[in-house]
Image 1: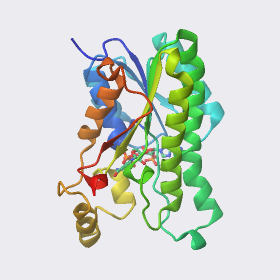
Image 2 (image 1 turned 180 degrees about the vertical axis):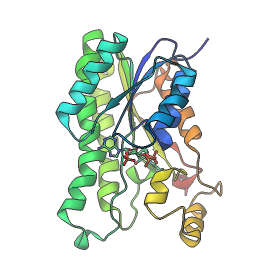
Image 3 (image 1 turned 120 degrees about the horizontal axis):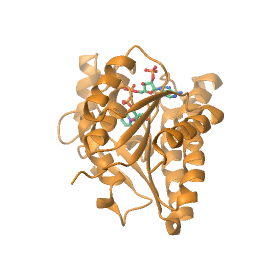
Image 4 (image 1 turned 90 degrees about the vertical axis):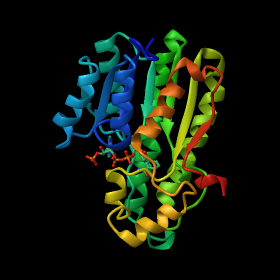
Length: 253
Ligand code: NAP
């Protein structure tokens, strides 16, 4: 028996990296997947990969930092699949590296706008709908940097800490409404985000970051997708308000 048979799943940023791996894993488990992302050159190839597992998958163009764009995306999911059962609020950006005193207001607002406000925008509309049927599972993508600091990334660190707080507050608010809300805190995962952040293409930086993971390597998107399927499915039916660490031991030190 597949774990998400006929479930309707909404995933933000599902065209690359972790989001795409989660979309493929959910489709493999029988889910109807709606991928919301900015339009990109990856669109056709990524959707082909997801549709190979379940041809019903759809793409919705959506900037998660826009409250109204997210509202309309959720309406499209419900109209297309008849319901919304599971949401992975995953979209996130890295942003410029700077100390707080040298960080521009623009750089700060951009990261907070996507990584924290974007998660609120999604949760607001998802919860509004899920409450009408009193069931649902929401998973928010935080980070190990939602639990500890990291120099030159205060916007990212603050947003990811905020995502865990938002997850815990909402988990308490909806615990008796049949809706579970959890987060995932990945360690460093080899995705395009690490290339954009100048981590995986500079050998000394890459080695330094890998050395912070006791397991001795970066994680893979598929390892995060396994955690997502667990939190999305009834295998985790007594879990709400948690931030699952999938980090090769980073936070155990
Ligand atoms: P990724 O491969 O770079 O994917 C990020 C995606 O988000 C891209 O498709 C990007 O589109 C999209 N995006 C950017 N702004 C958006 C917006 N406003 N609305 C909708 N989509 C938007 O990143 P990833 O590594 O898979 O990261 C996924 C999530 O995991 C993020 O929340 C990230 O913070 C978190 N995470 C990643 C790591 C890691 O080491 N990779 C570790 C911990 C947590 P464009 O390509 O067009 O910009």
